[in-house]
Length: 334
Ligand code: ACO
Image (cartoon, rainbow, N blue to C red):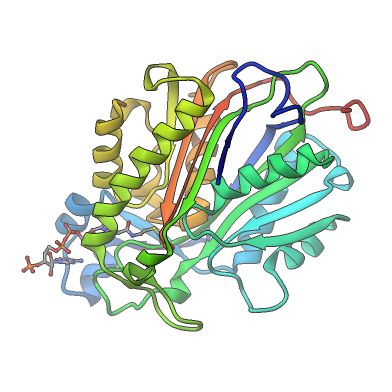
């Protein structure tokens, strides 16, 4: 399933789209460095750094707690009234409980009065969520809080050096407003996909630890990132030369370098936080996007490419035309 909008048009096939008007992040306090891992596992800082690019990751917290903190900051950064949020989507593969959805816990913590649900597409979750949010806006939602948050420490076997070096906890959130009539939409093209036949290369049974065939994930990840990014760019009617910033899923620097090289992007065009966060699954793209925005790396009119991949196997990409137009006065949108 995939879709497109026409670059610069005000509609998505005759429907409204959204634009990001605020963002925020959350990381738990406990830092697990490569040196900490060296002390307990047959591994070294040099091996982890060279093979993954990761220096440290964060442990602790709850998924709902990190999501609420990131969500609160995103609402503050947008400068909007929490009462105006009409939908909360929490992208996570590590909810706190089977029931209820962690999104409902976040909704209560933030005092929101709106629909709330979890979305699980593993590390591709945030980009799936972005597409879903634009779909809700096309059906009439006016302001959506979209969050990616994870506590992967509880799904990571501390004695497995193949996975313990990679994963961490965190959260990132954005507020998305329905664009008013006449304003350009932000989501120019998107692509989501899944290949359930590859589920055996990365999975966790309920209550169990992640099991991963790292080499196979690596191989497939590069391929699906390139395919999905190209599909989203094609649907947006743009090429790699038009893209100002790439925000890839933060899994492994070598996966990112290899995919970006094939797509024709420089390392300088890429948003990277994995050195200090590790792989935070659905939180990784909003964490990297937020840092790039805070650093002023994205300007009005720039094209931003988000590319995710993960367990499933799933993948998802989106091309955004960045807008600094700011929040919409609720009631002004059609
Ligand atoms: N420290 C030291 N040596 C190690 C470690 C370690 N932590 N892990 C593996 N090794 C050893 C292996 O035993 C092997 O030794 P051998 O040659 O004597 O057999 C050697 O290092 C090479 O092992 P590989 O598995 O080939 O190492 P590779 O370069 O592939 O790196 C890694 C492993 C980092 C896991 C890599 O394959 C990877 O990043 N894969 C993708 C993982 C990923 O992105 N997962 C998340 C997907 S997103 C989601 O949905 C959660």
